[in-house]
Amino acid sequence: MKLVIDKINSAIGTILIVTDGEKLCALDFADYEPRMLKLLKKRYVSFDFQYLKNPQGFSNQIQAYFDGDHTSLNNIPISTGGTVFQQQVWLALRTIPWGKTISYTELAVRIGKPKAYRAVGMANSLNPIALVLPCHRVVGANAALTGYAGGLERKRWLLNHEDGELSR
Image (tube, rainbow, N blue to C red; front, top):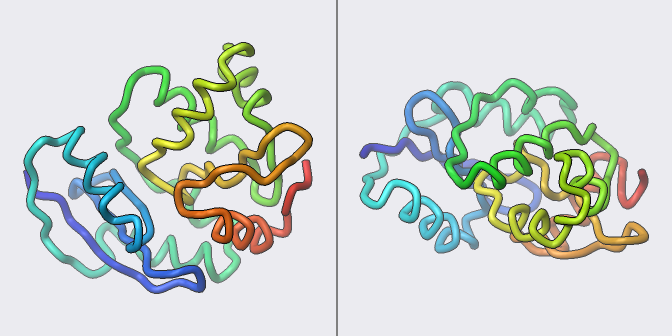
């Protein structure tokens, strides 16, 4: 399997963008590349990277997010893999508006599984497509800033960037 990869610089570090040639299948920070590779290997078993600048225009769209474009990530086609439950959680992340946050419990309610907030948190932690599936917009009870696979400092920066730090 050939996957296309690009790297872009951002205010919070180098970002790795991986596509299958049509859809975005991974987005992570370069210092978390081992995590990204582990998720990709679980999904594709065997693959090779082909380096290409701005595949499908995705790199430009992601850069536009950092430049303040509220809608640049909305229409990027994605391919997440994962279980049906994980896909439900990840797709629900796209419904959280720019500048808003919700709790894990609220996210569980949105997918029709109000008691599954812990499972929602676990699925959130395995999100293969950061930013585009905005898991950084999910916070703990009482709006507490909790885990983020890219690190809490990045989560805080992203929420500040969106002018929605811990505001519902």
